[in-house]
Structures are given as structure tokens and as C-alpha cells.
Image (cartoon, rainbow, N blue to C red; front, side):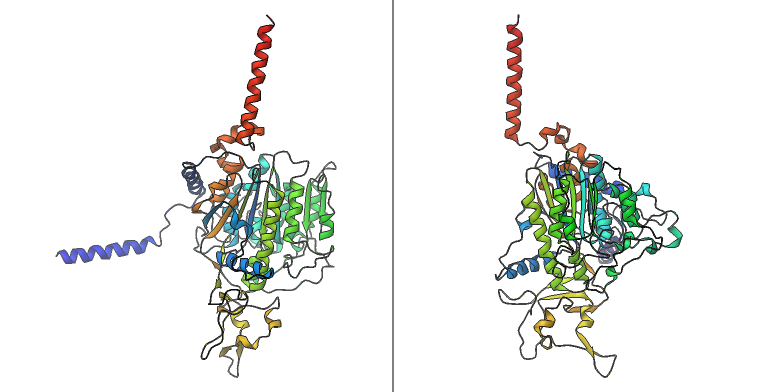
Length: 553
């Protein structure tokens, strides 16, 4: 009897454990994520207290920047400098604090950029492919949009900026200012007819709604989506993939013109379309700058036209954005979001070379920001929205070309690449049909010339054929430096990043938790020595006045 009961107990236990896999352990609503973020903050603050407030915040998001991408990217950086590569260190790896971010969406183990960016910017997790909403429905209203670090900053009088090398209305940047039941609703022709009467497309939200229209800097691609198609655009390499499809407005609206008309004559506003125009801005006196540098996504760094009539690099846009935000009109600091979006675009099409080159450019932009700011007053965070299915494998020798082969050709062995993908179009790229169209055979890698493998459109091998490679579900890194960087440590839910920024910079829902936010403005970025000096001078002044008052009797 005991044996039967014991067996029954184990069976029930197995069933309960199995059932738990399919049960959501929490309501996944705004209140739950808010309470999670606050409790995580309180836990961190038990061991360390803030000593300074971040006047400025720069948040770098490497789209699809997995740890494998960082490792392979640092090697490519070193090899581009003539080194073996493995010993190279990228700048943000020297930041004093690192944490791990859990990227899943509320209804998906492996996330997309819309929901992850929403979590990073708003502090609230949501469902896959959703922008700026916690409970997405086709009838969602603007009042339901989740406020973001851009909203919080503007409410405190800070200047704000958004920089990307994808379309400015693409999933990640859009999550900073818009809301949408589905990430694809970037222009009017993408929006289903049944919701057009009560929903503005994402591009319209950028120029018509807060906080988008109040951004001081908007840099990226997407002229087509804003109804400002450039008929003279040329030398653009066409790439495949779902994310590369453009959109031409049918409502005939030119949203660039609408954006420029909203400002009064006393506001200095500029619209720029190439590198020369961007570099020619009077940075010290401008209030708002809209820079659209491509009809669709901007070009890859290694392919772009680097002349003055071409597209600026991510580094150049970052430099210009900081100069604009930190000009003489800056009184209360700024919040800047910079996305390296082309890392993800390249991974989706198994273009490993382009992905790693984009990572190297992303790291240059971070270095540019570090060179232009002080760790005493600027919090810099580097993270990814999600990982990717790129795999760094093989037994290549030290200094082996990171974009080369993971093994050497041996008898009865197949040559393979150090960088491969689990999924994507690289599978069919490397196969050929013989006389029987139902049978495909792998093309041996040795049949490709160095010129072919070095071409921008070359695809690395993948295991499963797909039109686009899928994302990865593992945790991503969060590297931070500056006031409040200690808050971003251990392993946490991705939405916590927004609340760490809120607490550190005295904006948004966690500002009241920070005692330093209640201090006078001049104290916020002062160190302890200057505080002591200030207090000492105040004491002497009071003492002097007291003696003077007594002597008058």
C-alpha cells in the first residue's frame, strides 16, 4: 500500500510540475512590473546608496547584440587593427558595472524588438510585436500609451534625442514615443482599414504627438514613411528580408513639412538630409533638428557614401546629437537614446561580416559619447534588446580570421565556418539543386573564392532554411558607467532598466525614492568635497554676519 501511495505521490508531483510550465505566475500587468521594479531597486539600495544624480543619460541599444556578437565583434575589431584579435577589449567592457537582462516578452520565450524596447524605455513588459501598450487591443487609445524615459525627461525640462541607423519609425526607436497594437503600422498603408478611423500610424505619432514632436534631435532613416521620398537617392544596395520592405504613404501627407510648421518663428528648427547638412548645423543655437538620411533604413557602415552628400555614420550622428542636446540652451540636462539597429538587420539575413562591422561602428559611437561627457554627471548604459541565433564555434587557431573557417579540411570531414547561424537564408544560399529538384546538396565552402566570401551580400551558413533568421532567447548584457550605474547589477527583468534610469536621474516613477532628488539643483552633481566647501563657506558667512550684528549694539 505504501508503495502505491508513494507512486501516486510522485505521479501527482510530476503532473503539477508539468502544469506549472503553462501557468503565468503573475498578471503581467503594469502594476506587477511597477512593483517588481521598485522592489528590485530597494534590494539594490540595501547595500549601496547613491552619492550623485545623473544630469544626463545616454542609452545605447545594440539591436541583436548577443554575447556571441560581442565576442566575435571584439575579435574583428582587433583583426582590423592588425592584431590576432582575441586579446582586444571593447570600451564598454571596461565600464564598472555589468548586469544581465532577461528579455522574454509576456507571451513569448524569445522576444522581438518592439516589446523589448517597450520594456527598456517604459519599465513595463508587454506582448510580442507590441509598441508602447501593456494590454494591446486594436481599439487601444492614446491615453493607454505607456510613458517612457523620453516623456519623463521632457516633463522635467530636459532635452531629448533619438538616434538610429534604421528607420526612425522602426520597432526599437518607435517604442520611445509611440504606441501600436502591431509594430508594422509604420505608415498609413500598413494600418488595417478597420482601425484607421481611430489610430494614427507610427510616423504620424512621431510628428503630431508628444513626446515625439518635442524631441530636440531625431536622426535616422525613413523618408518614405513620412511622405518625403527622395527621388534622387542612389547607390543604395538592396537587401532581402521582411524588415527591408518600404512603405509609400497613400494619404499624400508630407509629415516633414507638418513637423516643421508646428514651431513658432522664435524656435530654431532644422531639417537635414545628408552628412554635409548635418555637420553644417549651428549646434550652439538650434532648438530642434530632424535628420532623415534615407528613404528606408540607412546604409551599412562599410557600404555608405562617406562624402558630404552621403549618409552620416552612427558615430557622427551621436556626436552631433550630443552637441545639440548639450548646447547653451541646455539647462537641466538631457536624455539620449542611440540604437545600433543594423547589427540586427545583418543577422536576420546571415550577413555575419556586416553584422560584426556594425558592432565595431556601434562601439565607436559609444567611445565618442565617452569622450564628450563626464562620468561625474552622465550615466551611460550599453545593452541589447535581444540576442540572435548567430553561433561562434569551431577550433580555429589563435588569430584565425573570425569570418573564416572553424576547422581545416581533413579526410572525410566537411569544412565549416567559425560564424554560423541556427536559422536563416544562409541555408539555401549554400545549397544547389542537381537533376532532381527535390534534392539539395551543400556547396563545399572551398568552391567559394575569397572575393565571393568577402562580398557584402555573402551569407554565412545556417542549419534551418528561413526567409529571416530568428532572434535568440538568452540574457543580454547591461554595461553601465556614471552616476547610478551601480543600480544595474546582477540578473534582472529587462523592464528594470527604465526604473534604474528614473531613480538615477530624478525623472519618472522612481525619482521620489532618491533622496538626492529632493536636494537643490546645484547639489545634484556635486561631489562630497565641493559640498563640504559649500557648507563651510555658508557657516563662515553666517558666523560673520552674527558677529557684525552683535557688534552693532
